[in-house]
Image 1 (cartoon, chains in turn purple, cyan):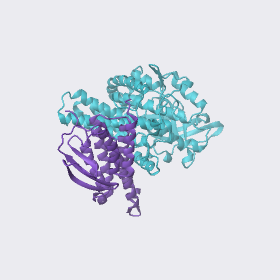
Image 2 (tube, one colour; image 1 turned 90 degrees about the horizontal axis):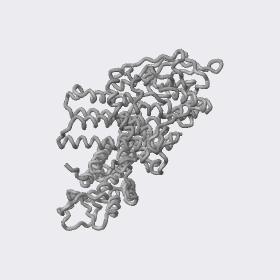
Image 3 (cartoon, chains in turn green, purple; image 1 turned 60 degrees about the horizontal axis):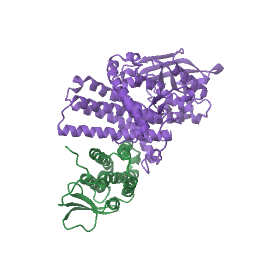
Image 4 (cartoon, one colour; image 1 turned 120 degrees about the vertical axis):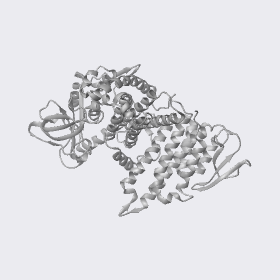
Length: 203
Length: 405
């Protein structure tokens, strides 16, 4: 059994919990606070998702997203960037898992309040099955993180699995998940976050 | 080092089971054509392991000794580790092996001292198959809907009447358990120990597509005499035997079924590694992705087993693991075929067998859609999906060696 440094595990857990309870911006702030001094916040390709705030002159903000919990910016830099360190590589999976949990919470609230015939959507077995499918994906990712899966290809798979789970939930939100500023946009930025920090797998 | 939640003791068991599984692969191919040939394989180490599992030391079980460790298979996590590796060798032979198997879990949960002495005593005499009869024709595995009747009769002997279907090893078993109804409602469900030599017991094998060695049967129970002493949970209130015992037992069995499914998926992955020595980049990526999917489902199965070992009522994770693992088994075997072209199943009998076997785990112990509904109910009830999902693992609960109660 590989040993994970307890302080880092605690940081990832906190980042996950903040993402679920408060949103992406505060969770990113918590993750960045755990980085070693001077460590870059940009991933391999020079991309990053950052809490809104002043950026360096050589950083280009390509999109601003006003999300629950605070605004984030999608940014890129021309500076040479190495592979993301473990804090960002593994932490981004934990963070996205928390966001996926928040999406599940949002979906339960939406489906529980949406009438379908003489009942709510949440009482439809087809919907219940889809919710369970998404939750299973989240549990699968959590299990892998608990087992300390940290190889680049494993992290890449976990990001893919989270995107699958999110997409199942998004389909339950209908057009409500297509509007900017809500759960649908959080999931969209979450996918871009995965793209920024997924480690390159050696050929 | 490969990521895992298993401790050093369980990894030793896993390593040994992996070696035994390799022997299963060779033997299993023959059993697909001749399911009754299983008796020729009783000396295989994996078969002997299964025959010894679920017999506690206090009833004479010797268990398995590996290095400085002893294993009796009384915990779900021990069974999961063994079952996956043996199923990776051959799921049919694994299911066709003698031993306490599913009945052993129910006996551990519900039997009294005298019943355990009888049950374990029979298993210790010689390699003995057992059966576990819940499913009924037209009613599936819904314990609340079962119709097989246990009628009280004179002089402390009950009579058992009904039909059961899809019961593994029933035609070769010496004893087993039957779920029956003594009255209406959930409190009217009970389970009894049955000796297959008793008049009125008849088992007929059903031809199946896969897992053929397990000789899945249809059972007819025609006025079978059941002494009162063989009614499981006789010393308990109705609320603590029938449906309660079903739930406790199935929660503990479910990770094992999931492990068999993971084993089948891993075997399909092995087939590609062995049969396609040169892969292009895209194929390598696809195969590696499959490997990571298998590994992450394996972690979930392990953690779900650790949770039910800590608390037998905590079965929602096992539902998630079972549904996901069975889907994985089907998709992994089909994905493996795609590495060999459209005639993969024609050209590679081992792969063809895995594709057929994979379909067999889906319906065991509740189909995937039922598991999803169970998981959903757990989510609504706040038992899963919020907070720490694996509390027992995090509390470092001992995960092996003691009874699963």
